[in-house]
Image (tube, rainbow, N blue to C red; front, top):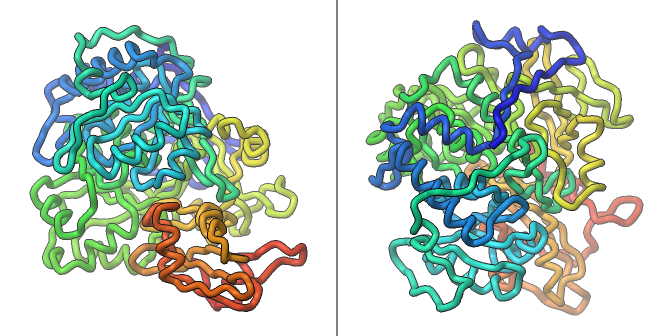
Length: 556
């Protein structure tokens, strides 16, 4: 396996750019960032922290030595099934220890991980499986997942389902080589064939995202991209972390890039204990926080808001938490203040995107957390504000433009999408589609999004996909789907529909029609039926922007 390397990033400005003034003493922005194959993270952790707890899942605990041994067995079992470089293996799982063990097992076997949202309906699964060219899918023997996975196997290129044990409503595995039990995968001595990985070229993860257009595409994240971002997070957290001593709570979904890097990979890099939470419930979370006393608590604003407003958190003291890092959606000042007042711990906001593996900026772990700011660029990362008209001119401090990013964490491109890649990455600069500015102290502020992606509780929801599903109804003439600010969920999905002349539709009918076509989180919470045509641009294109203006809805 390839040895580690370092990547040095040079700024087009100066090596002591303005944002470095906000770094705690001892931190350096223009630092060399180490890169290596992702399994190197686990191998180092096993060597350093063998007897330390690695995973705590509903009372079941696994130390680093046991986790390393399990991952080796999974790698060997996968190789026996034909997994090697170039083979895609999907993870269709909620948060469980299997999520972590198979992620590293797939990469050790030489394969590429493809993450799947377990809320996906069959239609969405089929589309992503075919687009990514996934050959195997790992899931649970739980009815909601197993049945969907089994149904799509008959419609797609899938060669096999790997079924992990689950409690509750389970079923016996059907006969045939396509259904592979977890026991069959791990029934070996853990001797796998080491794979030579080119960290800068080989794709570790295909992570689906809306990119700059709202149409899901597979972001190709190399081993170097993900390893570099993990090292950047390690450097950033250094003022508050102690290797082998911290505990991090993982309520964020591991199939999402935020949790993949800023929870799982970071935790293993630093020998943390990962407290894996399968599903968020505010009352249960309060009980868990009191019992487990994690020292780091990353989450999305909706989770902090739910805890702060729940009666169970009255008198809750979370002063044992060193830092709560918010991401995935803008953090309202009122939510930050309410959570901090209720719990006695501080919340800092960060920013990232799938194409950057994902972390780009964070508020300092020690120092000023500026309300309303996404913080400053993390080590090795350059943020430029580019003129929205010419797409070239770097704007001065205080001027608003498109937020663009350079750094070792920037993706290789979109899978089989050369045109979209060329539009998003130009001369090594990632055009994020977000609008913002850098203030006089180097803090970055977002003011708008070019993207139309809707952020529901931190999850990306793509309006184009919902519109496509609505258009399957034969009585629909026009529709626009957009995100509307929502105090509890961050944003919520609304749909405006014009039925065909002479056709009658109801909100309930549309929701029932969509139930098996999109996931529950994508079902519009409100549907507005209109007889008049929906607003359009001068060239006749349906316009979300004009519609929201017409409705008097202001986006955050």
